[in-house]
Image 1: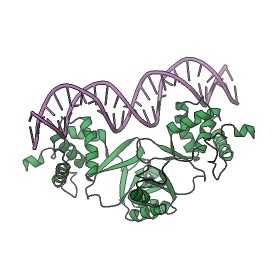
Image 2: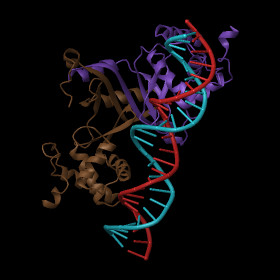
Image 3: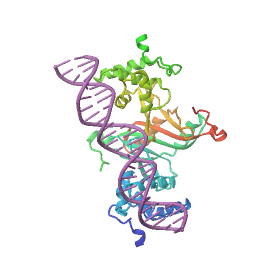
Length: 173
Length: 173
DNA sequence: CTGCCTGCAAACTCTTTGCACGAAT
DNA sequence: ATTCGTGCAAAGAGTTTGCAGGCAG
């Protein structure tokens, strides 16, 4: 337990635990690495843990900061090299909202759920909403031109109703 | 007519005319500039013409190349400074497929139509397919969390059926 | 003549890569 | 031993910006 808790039980992580336990997810990641012939190094696991203790969508730079709190030997290069491995494993999802930098988000449910991203133009937060019909829409649209869909993203830019009234976004901060 | 045709009647432009005449669109752009207190300079109009004679989605760099054929005094900086003006005017649409660079596309229909982007993973082409249900779907999804949608994008990544069979994408080139 | 607009080049941001060292098998 | 992974720093891609000069109103 003490060993398992290493790198997780930080002040930042406490109170942010999710539906699926982090150690279980990390075990999946470790197995994914081995299966791919990659090594389960301490840096890769630290980066993974950091990703799963960050609740919101995060950038590569934020992930680096967070991972360094768990293992200060983690470098920016390794974060960038580990991100595609994690997205390959489907434990992490890449979220591109067209803002120059990419966001990432842990896939706590295994990535089977179809979700739409709603980006609030007032506070820049990204909400993910279940959108079970998306796959159907994707194939409807693709089949018109002889393509078979692999994935689809519905992205909505929206204004916050509360913000318009009070000039404060209740979700900010 | 001779004056109007300046910068349009190029080999590249011929045979690529669209539903809406370019001079008419350019006139809208000119008016937009004036209304915003901006000047309708020859560079801005050359960039605009270049955008409207490019049929496919194009990058800033491709737009620069093309604009320079119409007016060789156009600089990269002016292209980058003009792009947001054109998207503001709604005559140009920005299309981000999460590939590092942004794509743009002239909005020949005025931008009222809801379209989904289908990106072919085999040939990297971007197809735009009418998706009238998108607006409804966007507001359904947003209203769940107290947001009012401004715009929405459905983006589908797909494989080419023909490519899978023949290893050649009939649309390539 | 005043102020917007331009080209140039440097700066900036985010990401990728070459290299030599270090760790795991 | 051999292979793979790492940190560092430099390079790269795409975009933005400061500045001095130019052109339009």
